[in-house]
Image (cartoon, rainbow, N blue to C red):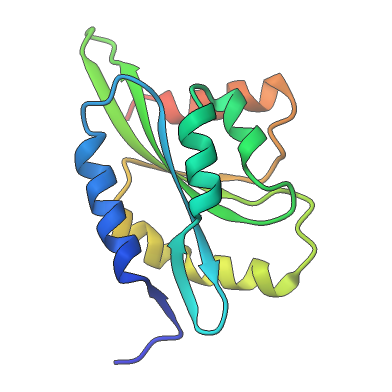
Length: 150
């Protein structure tokens, strides 16, 4: 069966490696995905992922590397300490939708692909980020959503 949207084979491989290599990570790690048009294909956003690898150790720093006016999917290996004192690393998928996205086409394409990406990544948490994370309150709310107990 042919579909309008696909995940690049390289992206699938990198996602699997990310899931396995970060399952015991003690620091925040990220992988940024974007959609390449014609054909619509989910690929690794190399520039943002490389920049994030060098610069991101907190959620505050994540907002600085993500584009201000383009949506992205972000996989985070987010280490937490559980209520009973165990270390755990959550795989969190953020759907980055800044309020300044102008293109209606981009909004529709990303909305259509979100379930495909979720099923491929199998995150512990899925969170849509619709603000720009400029406010400390927005960062605190995002941390709370990630760290919430099931």
